[in-house]
Amino acid sequence: MSWSTSDIPDLTGRRALVTGATSGLGYETALELLRHGAGVTIAARNPEKSDQAAAKLAAATGKTPEILALDLSDLHGVETAVEQFGKTNDSLDLLVNNAGVMAPPYRQTADGFELQMGTNHLGHFALTARLLPLLLKTSSPRVVTVSSFMHKTVSTVSQTDFRAEQVYAKWDAYGKSKLANLLFMLELDRRARAAGANLTSVASHPGYARTHLQSSGPALDGANLESRILGFGTKLVAQSAAAGAWPSLYGATAPDVRSGSYYGPSLFELRGKPKLVQPTKAAKNPELAQRLWAWSVEATGVDAF
Image 1 (tube, rainbow, N blue to C red):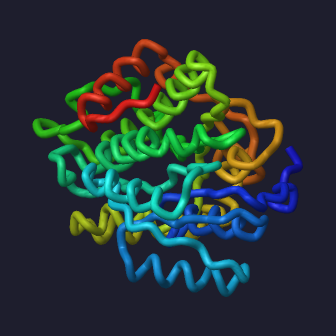
Image 2: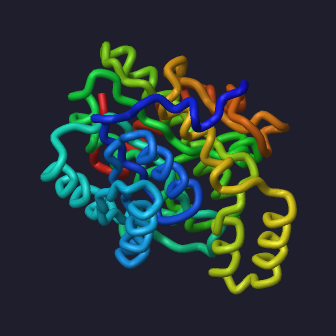
């Protein structure tokens, strides 16, 4: 695939919301969307970082993004954020579920869920469900959910993983949250088609990209050596965050994208131009996806379709 960001079409008149857009993949995604004419809302937890990112984006593109305070680890906060977004926007064309937590020590969200599953999956599940009415007001809405090749390291996910109070392994929990992202994306596609909704639900992964995630999680656990090793390895072999954002941008903007597709880098799924890639057998299991959806509705108190 010879795609590059210059192939992104004119997005004038379209509104996009990108979670975790203060740095890394989210920032690069917001940057390109702004450059191609979209109105962009950057949704993040830290107000200071949001202000700094918005200023950088405005300086780089001449267009100032909207800022939305959003803490995905707090389901009440997700509800409040959507209410706030609706005060200034009556529709939404594109939602990029990008924000994530990687390999921290065991911590719980405000609602008592394991932090990675609670943020990476449940927070985005609730956000998507609450934004769905605004998405369906547009002619061709898209939801892009950012997963990881780490979903290949696990074979299933269960309701007990939502809290993981008895047994917790940080990398296993991360892999399960990324598997949940793919199960959610595919089930959202199935439900949208069954409802006759013109919604495109796709997923992407960045391969091995230079972001703060690889070292920040272990550092929270006091694992400074692990953090340094991961940071060094990332600098040595990873592609840039800008390149890591290409699969998300392709899924968000390319005219030939089909709902239910999954995009990643072309070279061993580690780096390079975006291409269509395949989820694992577990990620494509519709029965598991349906169970995960039901558990997520129970956990968040919201549903879509």
